[in-house]
Amino acid sequence: MIVTGLQLDVAWEEPEENFRRAAELAARAAGGGARFIVLPEMFATGFSMRAEMVARHAGATRDFLRGLAGTHGAFVLGGFAEPGEPRPRNACSLYAPDGAELLHYQKIHPFTLGGEPAHYSAGAALASAAVEGLRVTPFICYDLRFPELFRAAAARTDLFVVIASWPRRRRDAWSVLLRARAIENQCYVLGVNRVGVANGEPHSGDSALFDPFGAELAAASDVPALVSGEVDAAAVAQARAQFSFLADRRPDVYRALDPDAAPPA
Image (cartoon, rainbow, N blue to C red; front, side, top):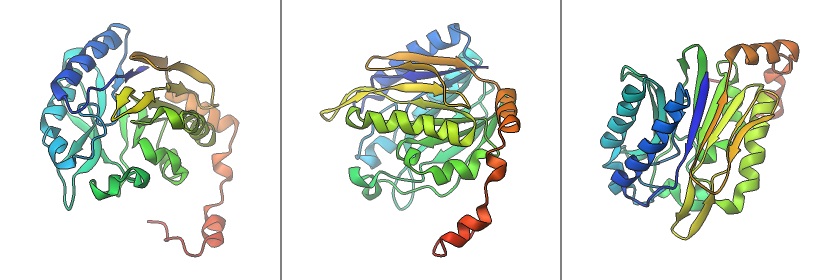
């Protein structure tokens, strides 16, 4: 399956313009054979802390994603702010070509250093879905810094998708952590970031696709671009069978080493 990330230059709080830009890139992606198309975190508005205002666009954004899926006969995932209690949520949804919503995920780790928890409530559940036999689990931006999330979903995942609004000044951490999550979980990882400037903060994108051994299959920086590559669930199964690192984990010991940790759900 060909998966493609749309590395967008996101216009600040201008959904209609961002829909136009995304639609152009999505058409190019579909023309290149993409079966699974991914858009960045809060792609319709940018990573705005005017949460109540940008969350009003959730319905239109979800309709846009659903429409892209139907237009191109592809699976489409994208991020948006949505209404919630006690505060809005930073979320994403995955749509099938027939318009069905296959998964909905809410960001588990709002970015404390950026003030996100004051404006957005945290999610508390993982979400995975099958895309033509490929098992997909999404995360959002700051979630990337927490390997526990990826470990919790590794056994049911062939492809982790990380959508983001990750700034240029921390680009090294972004790239290293994406590669690390692929290596340690022996699966594909697709990171889809924005480019352009938001509130004076430059974003370099550095969107990339890594294989189960951490090899970079595709990457782009600094400009709007498509990041595409072939992924195969069988390659994940083969990597894990050949090198049984995940089978050698000892969760019971790990829990004993951290007695203050919460018991497993």
